[in-house]
Image (cartoon, rainbow, N blue to C red):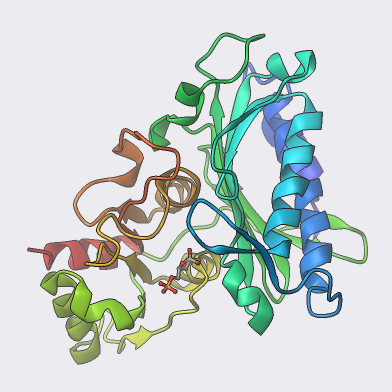
Amino acid sequence: MSKVITLNEFIMDRQADFTNATGELSRILNDIAVASKIVSRDVRKAGLVDHILGAHGATNIQGEEQQKLDVIADEQFIKAFENGGEICGIASEENDDYLAFQSETAKNGKYVVLFDPLDGSSNIDVNVSIGTIFSIYRRKSEQGSLATLDDMLQKGNEQVAAGYVLYGSSTMLVYTTGRGVNGFTLDPSIGEFCLSHPNMKMPETGRIYAMNEGNIDICESGIKDYVQYCQSFENDKGAPYSGRYIGSLVADFHRNMIKGGIYIYPDTTTSPEGKLRLLYECNPLAFIAEQAGGLATTGRERVLNIEPTRLHQRVPFFTGSKNMVEKAMSMLK
Ligand code: P6P
């Protein structure tokens, strides 16, 4: 039986890879891991504790009812970042504006984190997997000052790290710092994330396409052509395609990381910019997809090249196995 490598050990070992690493990024990743364990504990009992279930009543900037777990998760991560001492500010799906932390310690932080604390939360009541998505940047503003909006509006290719936590049949944390992608599974018996998926690579092709086909008549015809292609032909390994759509981005994305596949959320007549948010959903997953050998585009351009203009801006999102994303893009007019 091989030695169990915990996330802490892995981060410390990898810290040596970075010549000028001073441990700050390692501490941030550990803070995320601790907050994720707490959120995982709360998610696992969501069906039992009435005070958590049900809409929080308030609605977030997306106009979506906030499930109480959304708010709890958001607060958990903000507390971890604010007290960690490395982060000077954050932006979150659940907060209309970015937050610049006020303490002298936090103002000396060199990084900012953008995150979606609990994506897919509308699935909580039906016990479907949900996830956290995060993206870490070096600040652009002067150390010692308050974080600024410019610190948040950076291109995806400026990320120093990105990852997701999947609260599924097990709780997994998957992240990259630009040197490949590694996955860790939470062992609740010891409370540690343990290396379970070293050096993750997204299969170049797959047989799964994930899209809300209810939108098929309100998006561009090339997408309908691609879906019909999947329904009529076999993939380049002679296997028939299958439609699988969980309706929870992190779960659909992670399945494609393991098995290969494509996830498409296009722009539609009702969502002309698409539904998914650039800064804390598409950019971090695009970083991971590319590091694992996959692709992430808007259907026309590389997601990581997009110059952001608004915190909660949305983009169309095509991500997954290289061959499948290229095929889908070739069918767009
Ligand atoms: P639809 C959840 O709200 C989410 O942001 C993603 O997790 C998911 O992939 C998508 O929206 C589902 O959207 O319109 O298909 O219900």
